Length: 124
Image (cartoon, rainbow, N blue to C red):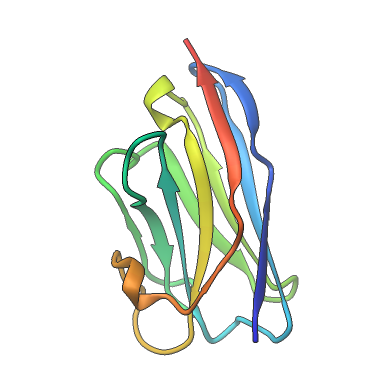
């Protein structure tokens, strides 16, 4: 079993930056694909970014491409999401997810473990 805990959320002004972290425990996730999703009030949860088990392949939603970078630190068993030039529409709860087998994916159903989420609020 894998437990995921997100941190780094908060309140930031538009144009600012935040770095989210996802700490995994229970077992190493170095062989897992990892993803970030977000859910804004009244909306479905949506894909943000994903990274392959090796870190060599990344994928981003069009809405964040160029502003967000996903990375992983296998030694620390963590995955990070650097978010720059934040916009009010980035306001959401951000969730980390881990996928035991297969390539990184944009589909929620492809992930086996989820964190509880961290709130990001961007003021205009």
